[in-house]
Length: 165
View 1 (cartoon, one colour):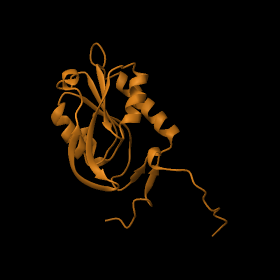
View 2 (cartoon, helix red, strand yellow):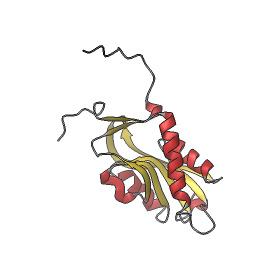
View 3 (cartoon, one colour):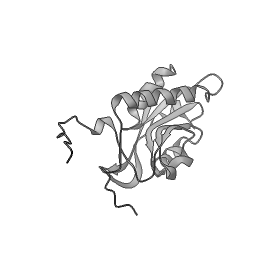
View 4 (cartoon, helix red, strand yellow):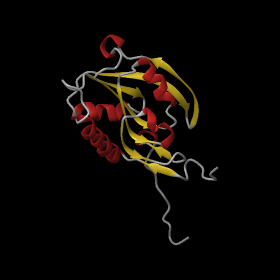
């Protein structure tokens, strides 16, 4: 077990970096599109909303919906549960649908999503080893004990100069 606190082994992602990585995800997904292209994007809220919007724009996908799965309370993970489903008349079993999230950690959230849309193509911007099996496409892998700080969780603030301390 690591002696690191979550903020000490952190991977800080800026808005610019997230945008570049989400575009890279779209570029990878364009080659995996089924015949006729992707029908829809389903973002896993809340973290998947920004990358899903970028992917939908890059791939010219006009149908965008959400599935809301609550599995975190701040930095504490709990049992995931769906609190809002997408329009199942549109997404059906998930054929031709992209499910987008910011990160796969343990994969438990995606297990719940896959139960609703078993044929969807699941893609995340970032992936940790424990959850990688739940994702068909991702951009960057980080270690399991790394905490990712996303731009929507951060604020700019003054930092004292190091000054050789």
